[in-house]
Structures are given as structure tokens and as C-alpha cells.
Length: 629
Image 1 (spheres, rainbow, N blue to C red):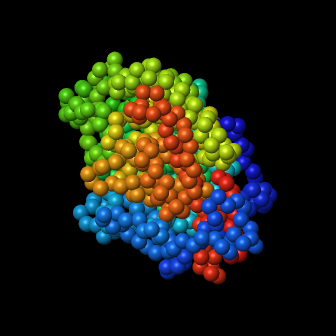
Image 2 (cartoon, rainbow, N blue to C red):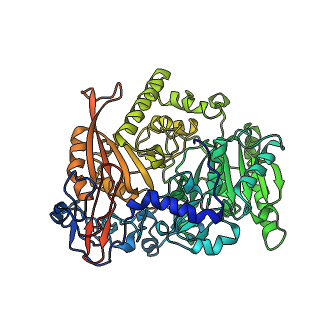
Image 3 (cartoon, rainbow, N blue to C red):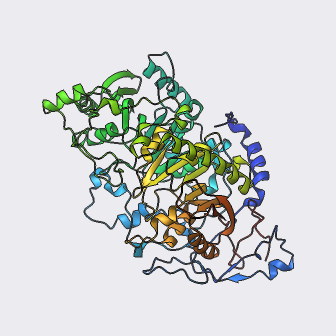
């Protein structure tokens, strides 16, 4: 992750503000959209650079008729010639498949199990089909690693977490910034001390979590993801998630900080991650009722943990003797004992279990009717919207289990998950070399400092080669595997990377303005002709929702597809260039070269006095709002 940064003291916030303001002075998005329809969008001439408010170009700028209006999707889909409407400002945090206003009207949801917090998408005719605007006074996010501790208040303008969790050191208001001191409900004195304590508990005080074999962690109910942030110096990578609930902006805070996270909840369905993927599942006051429903949620944890993986539980039942906590603790002991988990440590407010690597105990308990064993299933199937199962899976064939090397050796390790999907060692190495070459060319095309990009998503990640090639850069990568492709997500986790299953016919479980860079390699051709009517325009709209203003979108696909996207891009207010790059060896294309489309998301600004939307650009990177029109 590069050289680690020592956070400034609170008294230096004013100096930090001054420095960041000088860097970001030209990146302000200004006052945005009113809720009523606005008549016109004004763009500077194509290819203009550093427009001057007094120049004739500004006065003669071509006029587009994008309006500010809450427009809904139609069937068949239609993008107006004048361009997509811009959603009213009130929709600046619109997350389509976690829309409380829609879900509140649904019946037959098991709210006692929090099914209402799961990924539930409205029918297409009830989905907004307009560009989601940034909030008032949106600023380009502070760069990593400073963003670990400070973000702009105006970008995540919520105070509830500061008010409710301030005493636990989650987040504090500090002028125009939010300050994250690294605390949590059960580690209010800092995540570093807490992580050191977990290392002592898992190694009998002989090492840390890294020496305990922890490479990948699943953080349940992660809050603002400080636990994940402070694991990075140990080269431990975390998939953090929390629901969009009463503390709805916690994931938004995490992503604004540049920490990998997504909206999700343990409720009625399996999490969108493959089995045997994490060396640790962590719950620090995660508000999950592990003891309910015969421990079905703990059995989902068992599915996700690798053999000899740890379950860390920091919550009142582990240490308090009042209320009904002793009863809950007894239930937890009974469930974990039946699954043959071993309680290896219990200290202060934390208990740690380890999952067995020997299945004989679990088989014995199953024979005694203490435990249900899952029917043998096809492990190649992705866990996408699959119901939870009240059983555990046995690894009866121990020869199929493979000990993985430490990270970073794991990135290039030829695992059995590759062998199972027919990838030879030679093909794997060629794929790795291809992506090393492509990433070098990408950086050259982007023309920005590497610190300008932090949050990256590979929308069709295949074996994770793109993420591997970025592994030495100061970024984190969400590797997404469409559930309708070959199931390569186990390969990605075996490489020490993180990711999720998804269906791009539906919006992703994240907030708007989440990613600095989106990479779509042959994604659109995969969805071409889907019978359920999933269109190219739907995916483009979702890309626009989750890309940050001034963010980059790299699309590689068939030339006919790229041509369509290039034609549509101005209607999404994107700036687009195309480039020619070599294709991957043995791909089915007839030509040696393929086109790459590089789009740049726009910074949107509405002038209150004349209600005109202004898009201004200076090359790839710098946006400057016109002082006057």
C-alpha cells in the first residue's frame, strides 16, 4: 500500500484544510440542482481547455436541453436526443436496491430477520432513469492516505454517527472536515491497540494476526471501517459491509475515506462471496443475533471461513452477566460446540473461536443428530441471492484442500481453484503478463498521479489479473464477477484479493460517487441480448451513478459496442476518448488490436442566479467552474 502516513493531530486541522483547499481549489462543484425542472444545460465547446469566463467561447457555448427532473425508466428503453435528465438534488444519495421508501411498501418481508435491509430492487418502471447529482458544495475527495482520517463534511453531510457514536471515537466534526480517530464501539481507544490484542489472543502472545495466517477478513457490521483501515499495515485485506439502516451513512463514510466496503446484511440470504474465502470473520458489536434461528447465521459464517479460520466476537454476551446476556452466551456455546468450533481465547470483551480442519467431529455430531450436514452441492455455483441453509458443509476429500502461501506470494500462486475451471499454469501466467502490460498503458493514458485514484472496481474481473497488476499501487479493488459467467470468484479470493458476485442487470449495493475508476472488460458483450431486457443503457446509468465526479471509466469491448457507447456518452455528460490497445492472446476477436474507450465523468454545477447547468473541463483531470456565464 506504499509508505504509511502518520495522522495529524486535531490542532493541525486548520493547516490541513488550507493545504487541501489549495490542491482542490479548482475542483468545487458549487451549488447544485433545485428540485424543479431546469430548462437548459450549457457545455463549453468540445475540446476546450481552461475556459475563461470572459472569453467569447463561454458566451457562445453550445446549449443542450438536459432538464432537472425525476424521470423513470420506460419499456422499451429510450434516451432522449437532448440527453438524460438530471435527478433533483433530493436524490443525491439514491441507492436503487436499498431504497427504504420503496421497501416500506412491500409486504411479506420477514422484518424480524431484517429481510427488508437486503438487496431488493424495484421493478424497472419504478427505477429512476436520470443522472444522480452530487450534493451541495461537493468537493473532490481528499487523497489517500490522508482520507483515512479526514474527509469533507459537505461530501457526506450527515451528523447522526457523530452524535450517537462520538463518545466511541467513530467520527468527530472538525470544522469543514469529518475526523476519524480510529475508534469503534469495542475499541474506542483505537483500532491499532485492538488489532494487537487480537493478534495476542490468536497466537498466545507470540505474534500478530499476520503471523496467525490471516490474509482476508470479513468485517460484519463494519461501521465506518476503521478496523479494516488499520489492518492494512499488516497487509491484511478486508471485505467490510454494513446495512443501510438507522446509521445509513456508515458505508458512505467508509467509501469516502477510501476503504473497501459495500452495503449488505446477514438476513435471509447467503452473502455474495464464495465459501472457504476468509481466514477471519469479525463482529465487533455488529448487532447480529447469532443465537437465533438455530444459529443459521453462524452456519453462514462457517461456509465463508477457511479451515482453521477465526470467528472474532466482541459483544456484551461475551463478558456481561446482566439482562439476558448469559442466556445468549449459553446458546452461542451450544451452537458453536455442535459445529465443533473451538473457543481458543476469551479476554476483556472478546471471544475467539477457530473452525476445525478435521471433519471427524462434525460427522460424529451429525450422526448424533446434533448437527445437519448439507447435501453435496456443486461448489462451482455462485452464492448470488441463494437462501441461507441451516447446515454445514463437509470437506470430506481433504486432498482437495490446498494450503495457500502468505500474501503477496498468493497473488501469483497457481491454485486448485484455477485447475478446476480449466485454466492451465501457462494460461494463468500469460494472463498475468497481459494485465501487467495493460495497466502500465492505462496509467500512461490516464496521465494522473497514482494518488489521484483510490477506489477501483473491476466490473468483470475474470481471474483478478487487473487487480493483481495494481497490487503495488495505492488503490483497493472491488473485483466483481457476474453470477452468469464462469465462477472465478474463488480464484480471486485464493489470490488474496476481495470481491463480490453481482448481476449488472441490477444496481450495485453502494452509494453514488463511490469509485474513482471503473474497469469494464468485455462486460457489455456478456449482457448483450439478455432475455430479461437488461440493456446497455441500464449499465451505463449505473456506471454514472457510482463513478465519482472527475472519475475515469475504462471500457474494452467489441468495436460495435464501443461505437454505441461513444454515441450515447454526450447524453450522459461524459467526455470520451478512444485508444487502440493489443488484445489478449487467444481471445476470439479476429483482429490483433481492440479499441479502448476512456470516459471521464463530469462535475456538475448549477448557477443559482441563472439556473443553467455548466460542465467545464481541462483535459483529463482538472475541472474549473466558470465564474460567470
